[in-house]
Each structure stands twice: as structure tokens, then as C-alpha cells.
Length: 440
Image (tube, rainbow, N blue to C red):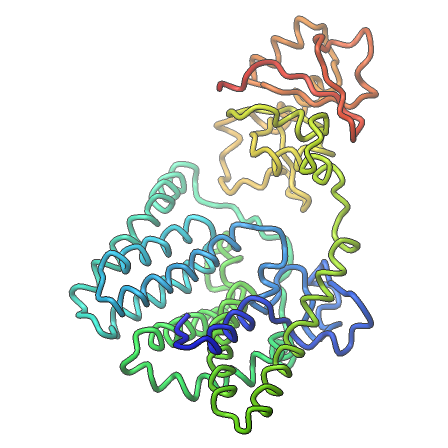
């Protein structure tokens, strides 16, 4: 991010994006912990599929909103640094806006990025404060307001939030945090010693320091003052949200430290040996985790066939045409349909039980203002099993705005209420009934 030569740039890319911890020393082959709350320190805090404290493993899972927000944070920091170096307010404004957009996806990267930019406005580098503040903070606030303002209006309208957090936080002991960062930690110490003093005059070095301070302050605050926030906001006071972002700042320092180490070591053979050692300590854990992922992760064969281009795969039959579709589907395939197509579902349930709120909606009074859960369950069951006459089946579907119905094959036979024209999936025992063009 602030590297001034190829060696530092390569080191930063390696240590920020590809480096694992030291768990490979105790792993006997490909390994990955799918549940980070079970036997968390089995691999010294490393090789966690989700909730890893390592910035590389932070993005090992399929793209979630947090991954998009983290990518936006990196883009934002790069834009702000470049804008400071060129004295270009447009680039700085884009950086502020990118942090605001990150806030539309996930609070973790947004809080760290916003904290760093506020600190930069207090302690500017190379640009006058009265120019920097509006250029950074107004775009940030404007983009974030796209989410925050409607959210607060809904908060008042629907009576606040309900707590949706049912799982325990992921807590690593100090030794496991260091082990999960692996070679990052010693190289970060070298990079910090060399680059932190440069923050007095170098915009990039200053912003990197402020990112580390912002992430570290959040980790410290939630660790010391845990559970001081309202019950419905308790997920935000969990340190496992912010450790990987602090790890990211240290990984950038580590990349710079590796670049400095390689450039200063003499003879050249010693520099080459140091670079090779860093690579050998950095890559084994991500390689082992990637090799283990296909066997450890759930076997979503339906995704594989759909993405492979089979037009009769269930997900492709459902998502055949673009549009704003509403789907009635059995619980077994509902989440896959939503994840693949983005279509709305009449009935949606998450895997973690939330009695009375299976869709895990934050508004306490939502089902007094929309279709109640028991009605959704009943209508979904009737439509997906054809438990009425064909005429009443169509009336019921139109009444609730249903565009597509996915029915299990065992329920589709003469005498049921399904209309003609259903198409059987090639990979799963389901039949898809499409009623219209989904409003397209």
C-alpha cells in the first residue's frame, strides 16, 4: 500500500493476502476447522474457515458482505494515500466515499476505516485540515447515510431492534493470536520500527499507522468494555470482528519489513534466504486449508451443476430469466435458491433457530405489519405440495405474489393442484412451476 519498491510491494501482497499462521506445524495434512468455536486452538488458532484472526483466512470463505467491505477498505486507503501524494481532492473524496460504501456492506471495515480517516483529519499529513475534512468526511457520511438514515427511520417505526446473536464469540488466547499471524508478527515488528517514524512526513506511513491505531483501539475497547452496548447490538462488541483488521495493518507493516530486510541484508545470498524463508513460513497453511476445503465444506452439488451450465439444473430452472421474482420453495432448497438467484422467498429460515423469527429479521414488530410466519408456512406448504384444486392453487399463488413454485417430485402427480407445464430438474428431485415473467 505504501511500498516504494518492488520488493516491499511483493512482500506486502504476500503477507496481506496469502499468508497463514503456524498451524501447519501440528497439522498432519490438509486441514480446516469449519466451526471456529469447536476446538479453536487445535491448530494454534490457525486454519479457521470463518472468524479467523488472520487477514488472509478472513477471506477464505465464499464472498460475504464483510469480504466486499474489506476490499473497499483497501481501495479507499489506496485512494486517500494517492490523493495526498498528488494533492488531488477528487481521489481523496473517492477514498472517503469508498469507506462509506463499505459501511453499506459491513460495520467492521467501516468502523476501522472511518476511525482512521477521522484521525487523519485530526493529524493530517501533507494537506491542510480545512481542505481535508470536507473532502474526506462529507463523501463518507453521504454514502453511509444511504443505509444509516433509512435504518434509523425503520428503527423508530418498527420499535427498535431485537437481538439475533445466538452463538458465542471466537476468543483466542494471546499465544494463539500470534501463532495465527505466523511470520507476520516478527516481520511486522521490523516494519513498524522502520516505518512508524516516517509517519511524521509520509502520508502513506501516517495513514497505515492510523489504521493500526483505529483497529487496535476497537479491539481494546470491545475487549475491556464488552457488553456495555445495548443487547440488540451485542454482536458489535465482539473482538473477533476487529482482530483480522488489526492483523491486516500488521501484515502491511510485515510486507514493508520484509522489503527492508531483503534490501539491507548482505551478502545477497542471505537476502535470498530470508525471502525464501518468509515464503516457506507464509504459504503452507493456506495451501493445506485450500486442499482440505472441498472435502470439509458442505457438498453443494446443486451449485456445481448450475454453475457448470446445465440448463435443467434446479437453480438454473428457477433463475432462468432476470426479474424481481418471489419464490415458494421447500426449506431444503430455499436457501440455495436465494443465494444463487437473489430472488425473494415467501418463507425463509436460517440454520440457527430463532423461535418466532425464523428469517432472522431485526425488527421486533415486523410480522404485525407483513405476512405472519404461520401464514407463510401454511401457504408455502400448500403451494409446494399442491394441496388444493388447480384453480384455488393459482388464486393463492397470485394472492401472495408468487412467481415461481418449487415442488418436491413425490408431491407432483395427477390429482394434485399443480398447473400444467412444470419442468423437472435434472440434478435434484424437484419440479419448477413458473407462473409469469417476475415483473420483467
